Image (tube, rainbow, N blue to C red; front, side, top):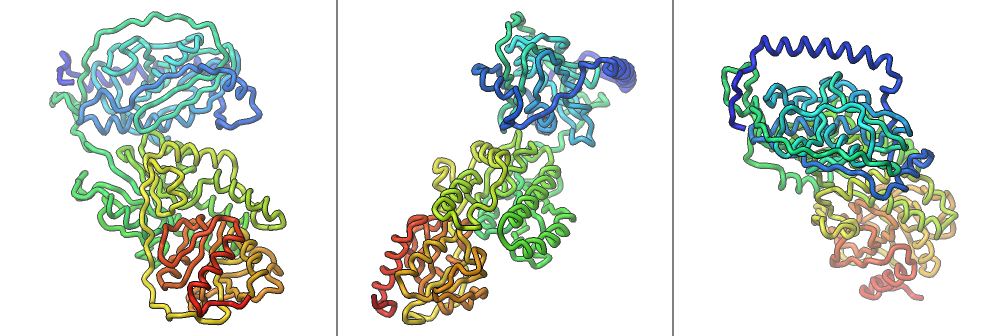
Length: 604
């Protein structure tokens, strides 16, 4: 866009434009006040079960769809305006995606979205005005109105109001006369549907997609007119220094933001190895952002002690520290169970919302801790961005299926089915994981869920003191490296102890039921380091174990270990893996270890 306008815009012309626009805004506001059809329609999640529109979505096999590219038609100098446009689209999608309009209802773009103001999260984006592309709060929303108009034409809807652009930007729908310009609030896009209509609006890091689900309607054929391209000057690239709108580009490239919670040493090393080095944006010698709840190195909290060097900014919110202190007390009280899980979900939701609202438009790629993922997805902060996931747990859907399977095996368990997340939250996580660019995890079972896009890390073994050689007791002592709870495989372990007269140390409390181990040689040792000094074999036949730190500690000490595949460990010396929920295989593994070491032999 190197052409120069014949007439350079002046401040006086801008004041005249603003005055005229204000008069038109007041007039349109007065008209809307008396027009009962101009309203905002409710937005419902995709899994809504009790609305007639769901039948519409299922009946309309060939839904109208319009898709357009996000990063197109701009120079490098305009990069920040493109990023601002995507931020504005991201903000507006929350009011569009899932909108449901009954038969005979009219859709109004501005009634649905509301005013594009900075206090509502809108930023400077690209706006085409009087032959120039200028920075404007809410700029770029025309890409959304264009797509809505295009889909409305495909669905055969009645177009009530539509205004074409007076200039065409290459790559836009205006090239084929399928565009609809909007300007708050008097230049609107409105259409009416004769059948119930559901609008779905989604955005990945490359494109914006609009889908209309409705019963087939008589398509109103609208001729497509190819318009000549009219180049527009850009306030960031035209070079007309005499124009009062002329600006210098501030940012020419995107940032990566790392959104983390509890520290895993594997992820800490990964972030340090992948953060951008040597780049410079503004005054900082670094480019990327690190978002963390608390700077653990300052407050001496090991679970938040991420390495914070080498980032343009290390972000933390004051309210998070107070929240974590309060919730840590509540988590100690809850210990385990439904209340414990609800507190964790609420904590992750709060943190994700604070992180999301603090992301800047130039943040184009995210690396996200999994616990934050579904909340960021539902709030729309992932739209228009690429993202990787630091995978810390089995996806909610598969996790609940596994717990259901365990509960079916042991219906008497009070813990295996005491909590399940909502279908909406699980579906949000599934959708986000499907769109994620890369899955990053050291957990072998999780890595196997997405073999094509997983980057598997090595587990970091802890640095420990050497373990005394040889067995510590005869008959040998088993150690369960967790509290006594159903998902850690205690039913299978109890079944084995019926056949083998062995002593068991439990590294935690009793969470299943008070008399679960009645009649067995069981002791409780909450001090895990002390428990390791007494153990001959570590047994972890878990149904679920996402972070096997205690097992890694035993392996580092050279203690023979038996674990299920749910523990996510690769093949390691001194470790026997057994299938999940298989007491026979567990007993055979224990016997195998005792046969390999004469000092561990037990008389039958």
